[in-house]
Length: 144
Image 1 (tube, rainbow, N blue to C red):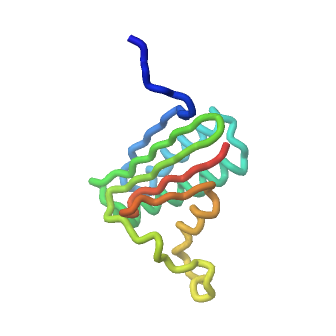
Image 2: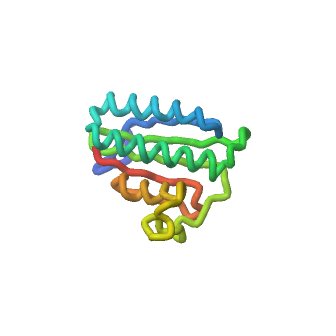
């Protein structure tokens, strides 16, 4: 029987998935995956650096702020990659947060603070940054 589902215009990339324990050291697994994908798809150095920075930031935020380092909770990382783009999704099992009402890290009163720049970094280094309504999942797009 022939498949009758139209596939015109549908992008089909290669899918990668990681399930990380809520511990700082688990980010090493993510870094290995980023390197593997960068090698396989010949990702440019500047894009690789942006992906590494953003995904590290998003994973650490999910582990620390989302899952609160709870060993019973996981962070799920998915990557859909083809020769033109990479779409990464990072999901934690936390309560989420209000990403629309964060302090501006470039405001004078926040410049000396050691934290509070993560979402700012994601929005500036990824080509697209989309949070789900709950705030416990972020989708990061990178042109390759």
